[in-house]
Amino acid sequence: MANSKYEYVKSFELSPILLPNTYIVVRIDGRGFHKLSSKYNFDKPNDGRALGLMNAAAVAVLEELPEIRLAYGISDEYSFVFDRPCKLFERRESKILTTVVSTFTAHYVNMWPSYMTGKPLTPPLPSFDGRAVAYPSLQNLRDYMSWRQLIEATGHINNLYNTAFWTLVQLGNMSTTQAEAELKGTLAADKNEILFSRFQINYNNEPGMFKKGSVIYREDNHEHGSADSEDWGLKLHGGKERKRPLKAKVVIEHVDIIKDDFWIKRPWLFAAT
Image 1 (cartoon, rainbow, N blue to C red):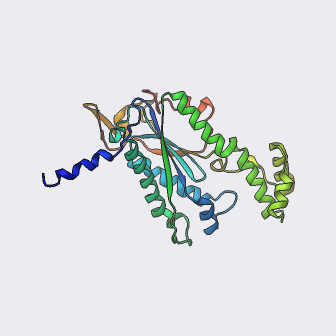
Image 2: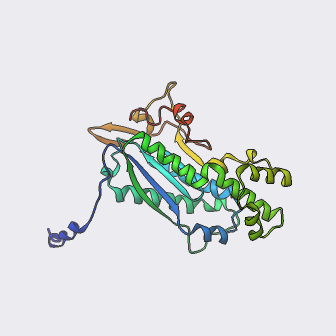
Image 3: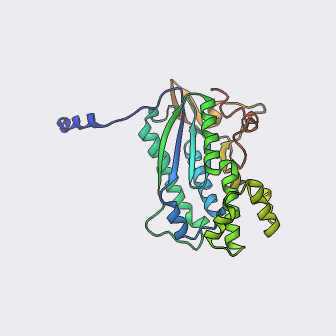
């Protein structure tokens, strides 16, 4: 071969393989989104358009990668879960990670005009980084998902703080310093009281997307739940996965994923693992 003497450089390439028989989670995070939200004047404390854009990009990722069983997102992050039998790219970490990040970013930028009307993108453009982690058991995976819902929304308490804070600033005509001082040391009940007594805002009526984040998965086509690989867009043959036309509809919900109820009602998500 003409180039054989140069092929030795391939030996420098590292291709870590994610442990077999583990759940692969790829988490993407927006880079510099604090500046981005200020640049495009996102609504505070929550911008439904921006969150809708994140959700739409995540749905597009699931539609392009049928190996993904579940995704959870809040704020400027999303976690994508691959099932334990997944053999996508022979489980090479770099290939899986870069595919998810680049696919999400491409759809996010492409869909921007549909959600953020009147706010054309200019450089620096939105971008995302990511990481891939392998979890050995379903309990480990559930604990991870619970951690993300807690750490980002602190069980919705952090969002409650933000809602009270920006309500004091925007409707109460306080400075950010005054609002911070007003909320210092307050409990959840105190913040609820401030919102309701002063501004007639019932926090319980706030959209679930703001309080719980967004869970994306495919509906089951069977009455009692199934983990049939073909229904998930995959068919196993000779130990390899092949893409098939998807039958299951991708849905978005804004629910508690910490309690057992979510998992009990959706046994097909990881029924075969």
